Length: 426
Image (cartoon, rainbow, N blue to C red):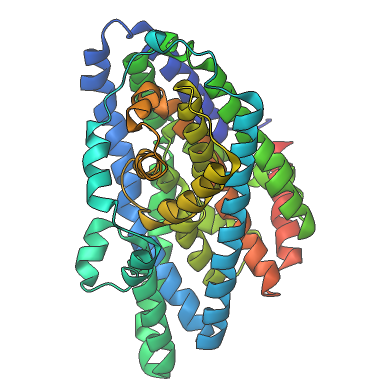
């Protein structure tokens, strides 16, 4: 008897996404119902993911670092990783500015047709973080209270402690083996829990997207359709050209690579949260031939320093708001925007609504009206979905780039895993 083919997670999530859009459309006249019943379900799913992220990062990183035990190698990896992140995010900024200047999404838009959104919650956060510069970010990498960093989800501080702890465990030799066994067991258990939670992903996606559509409605996209199309087009162009070229240099096919992480891409896009896929990305990149020490360091660090989609969007949105108000931006002003975004996009990483907060800080520093953000607040969720998916591709690829750069990428393991993925897809 022929066995029935099981519906894959990617298809289940897509079905959840489509059904969520349909339900959200029918509830657009009753947004409170969506908010009362759909939003809590989506929030529970996001909270389940956040619950397991930190235990996985800490246990995987400590085990990976302790397995290496080489401080010089870790320092070299850290330096190379930050350099790579800075180059790629700067390219994203330049691409965003060029496309915004060529296509001019804010030119000719009737501002009266736009529904102003509420940005007050972001303004308060921006006031608290506006003095928080690039140097402060590096100072705050060192935690004063580990438990506070764990509670706050301060990923950079957690990574720093995990690296130091891993070095310490390696240094004490045999006495550190019980600690390693415990943490390896913790990582394995958390990956099992991740697989359980992922079974709820279609329901979580259904609830999150259903509430989103019910709240803002499809009609709110029409006046800003040019911006939405440009952002999505820019994201696709960046992935195919910039990340595709990067992948080609390290002899990886970007389309085959995206096939490997397609479940995570759909999930990240649907939930507009890259945290939902962090555990599975780390697991898949290890199966694709990246060493645990590199994967567990590069991917979590990239969540603060390598937000390719976010930086690309921020560049476009800044120029869009200038065009909306008819403000001419000379070349020197646009260079200033690049420099400011290079700092602000790293300086307040990890803050909720980070893209809006970064834009508020940037607009204020280059003399553009911050009120302009209110015009795109209503559709920020739609834009956030695209930039989150690009962030996921960029961070996954970064793990492969660093593994190749360090000469530790296992090509045979990668090919074997790729063959497995292709067989499942067939």
